[in-house]
Length: 294
Ligand code: FE
Ligand code: FE
Image (cartoon, rainbow, N blue to C red; front, side, top):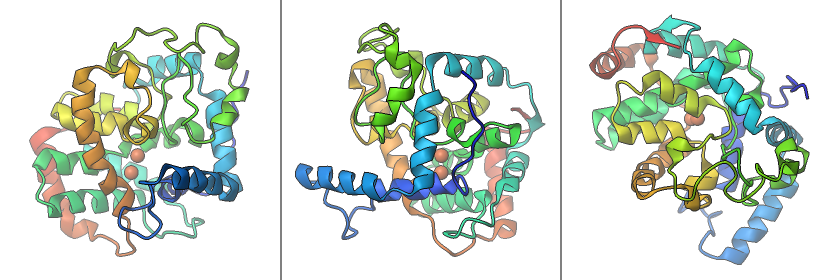
C-alpha cells in the first residue's frame, strides 16, 4: 500500500482551527458539554458541517496511520540525524511553512508559538511551562522534510490495538488495514493492560517527534504536554484509560492544563518577535542550549 502525499488542508492551521469547532472555548455560548445528548448532537452537526478538506484529511490519516507505518517513521526520524539546529533556528525554519492561502489567519507558525507561550507567561506559570509553549509545534518541521499533512498533524491515537469509536471520523478506520488484523484490532492489541503510555505507539506526528528532540532538557510535566498535546481521544475524551498507568493519569493534569493555551490563544494581533526574541533566547539557553539534533 503506497501512502499518498495528497495535502487536502490549505494549511496545517486548518486542523487546529477545526479542533475549536469540536472543543469550543468554555464560557463561550456554544459550549454545552455538560449535557451528553447535546454533545452527541453537536458532534453530529460537526461531522455534517465539517469542511471537505478536513474530512479528506482525516480519511487519509485514519487509512494510512498503521502500526507498521508508525514503527517505520519512528525508526527513521528518531535517529535525529537530519539537521543540527538551535531551538530558535528551528522556529525560523518552521516559519517557511507560512501559507498565504489560509483565509482564517495571517499568523505564521512562529506567531502561534509566541502567542501560546506569551499567554502562559502572562498567567505566571513556571519558565519550563512557557518554554513548552514555545516549542510545542516545532515538530511540524516534519512537513519540510517531505511528510504529508496526515503524518504531521491530526488528533493522535494508539496504533497496534483497537481504534476507539470516540476518535473523530472513526468511520474512516474501515480503510485501515490493521482493522482486518485480529491481533492489531483487539482491545489490547500488542500491549498489556495498564502498561503505561510510554510503551504505546501513537499515530505518527509532530508531538512524538518534538518530545524526542527535547527530552534531555525539560521536566517531565513539560514532556507530557509536548508528547500528548494532540492526543484528544485521551485528554479530552477519556479514552484508552486501560492502557495508562497511575503516573500517566497524574501527568495528564498537565496535558489538560496546557491544552487551552494551544487552542484558545490565537488572536489577530501579531506578536513582536523581534522584541520577544531576547527573552526566549534566554529561556532556550537555560533548558535547551546550543544546537539540538533534529
Ligand atoms: Fe500541535
Ligand atoms: Fe499548537
